[in-house]
Length: 468
Image 1 (tube, one colour):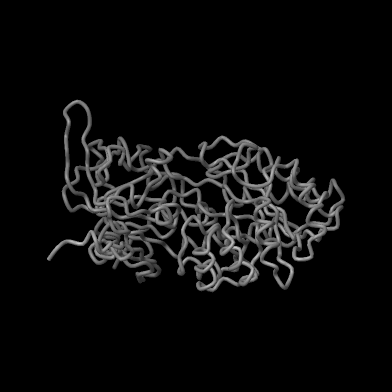
Image 2 (cartoon, rainbow, N blue to C red):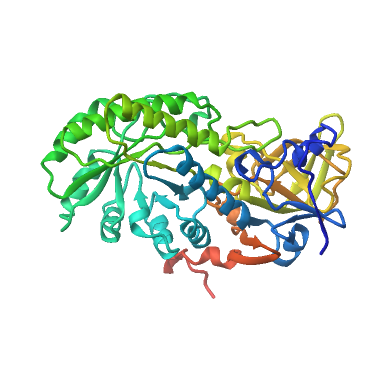
């Protein structure tokens, strides 16, 4: 199939329709600043392609809603983190994929093959990581309320456990591990970021981590625990962050904690600064590039350690959204239309809050186009509604589109993070399929659920069964 690339320069008219695809120039070194996957092109018939696959043809083949993940974008983002860390941090460094953003065997295999590590927050994510090929020594296990069974699994696998609270320590001690558990201590650094209330995790009023004034007591307690080896410290300040100064502030706080831990005899070698770098969901978003973020963090950590005469630790970071979001596109089929004169026009699709709960949860915004007419004149404004029995099930408000008819395929960009991973069966709607696209090939990496499969865990007591 003949394809023409989307122009790399900003020569198209600066209206919203063209801004979605053309502005700013697509940057292969920093995919988080792009609106679309790196491989997005418009073919000779004016249709969108990603990974060499025509999106509307994928929709016909696999059905909708459909999650599409571009392998080249995911690999490119992983490589951007790896190369930036190598260029800007004078010591050893490792990026860990925050798998809560989108956990699957295929994604694990990809990031493992790119030399990254992974952080997990449940038994399910741990098993996915290991069975997807991630070496246990490159896995860290988070969570503010880990069960004893989850901790037992983490100890058996030999992954690093991030101790979040005293109960973690009590449960680990009770497990009586036969070899020292590699521990990383999480604490709240008390740093505020201008982001959504629910995704700010670094301020003091947070469910995550030890309070900073508890850190010394925890470190002293662990001096007498033969089962524990404190090898790292962790702090995280939030998500979808466009600011850089909070990361500079975090470096100083963490260097102080590193100095304290080493002074008490703990062999701390890892300093984990979390993640949080934002991405570009809509044309007006302007996040820092991956290189700019890494450079800021790396230089701040190195400087803070030099000021305290500390040997450089291994620098860990945990990109999630910024690693996988831009690689993802969700496809929907247009259904019904409801025009309310003088108020709005609702255009409904065959998905919604069960496959993307972020708009109703965080009031998140997205960019969307018709897959087969991405450059057509956007002559009407619609509200994109989901199919669920919920008035708030609205994916996009005031979306400019060409006139759309039933059956048209709609592509929503930057859906690789927190869409599949937060999907539900609300209204008993099956979860979508997912495909990985690369060089014209589409591989099914998550099959679509079937309605009858939603009943497989139901148990109907004998006394309630219908009489034949």
